Length: 395
Image 1 (cartoon, rainbow, N blue to C red):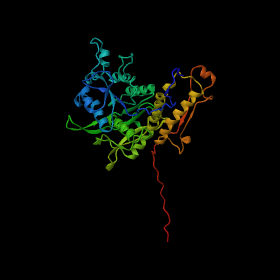
Image 2: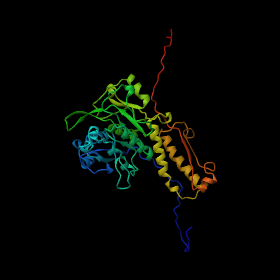
Image 3: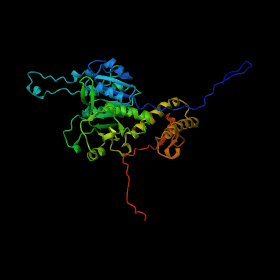
Image 4: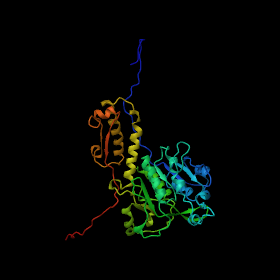
């Protein structure tokens, strides 16, 4: 209490106790690739195509990165972070072998570029590969255009799983040289999605059409869908802007072999254009089958984590518990009203519990506050089924 000594009128500002929780960003991408120019292993914030060319050059300087960024912006992407992990010629360098070692000479092969992307984390200023993105909290999507090495995919997924706030969009190989049911897919994870096939776009350098990996434009569609509808809307049945054709045209029957495995197709839907026609993660867990469910949980988790930092070191009592419940409920109410949660009423859509049951004395003594939250996510209508039968005509 202030110490009032002199007669007069005093004004005090009193906190309402409400600490609004803001939704975390869901559409800031981290792109990693090779370019002949630009800083190495540095996460450079890029807001438009002109900024990208300023730092990393244009289409001539990069095998895949430039096209991915161009398509990202064309399909609705905004702010992103770009890291150049190496020069294109470095990734193609041949391994050397001692001249006097015939066995080593015979075994010499081209150096895999996977190491440049996987990288190392030696602390601030000494990070490379995907680790460059570790300290950039804004990133929610990870893209490595044109990289389909299983080791790179594994590193992408591990990066997302370890950070627990981002989602990987992964590319398929350019050529299909096996049967559909034998097609490669990355390892099991709910933190990534896999797309097939490559897309045909116009290349202003070649003055002709060329095939590019799908991850760049697909990431742009994610950002566009988040902005137009929200992260709870599956980034599927959405037009891919700039796509003029596909490397492979698959039918619905052929997709039936791939969709259950979590391989999302991009298909030519006739007059409706080229569209993303799949919304699955590569997880075998039915709870995390859909991209929008995983990304909704990432958004909710990061929003609550960021929005409740004020509670650290506060007195751990019923007053704190009530404030936390009130603020989290208020946030989830906005999520429910946006259409992201299933249920006619808030009680059907979510619950928040923080009381003596979740916080027994032994946990309080350990300095912990435990809040139990449950939400019912809306899942996409992946299969729309109409049952049509005949009725007898009236006479």
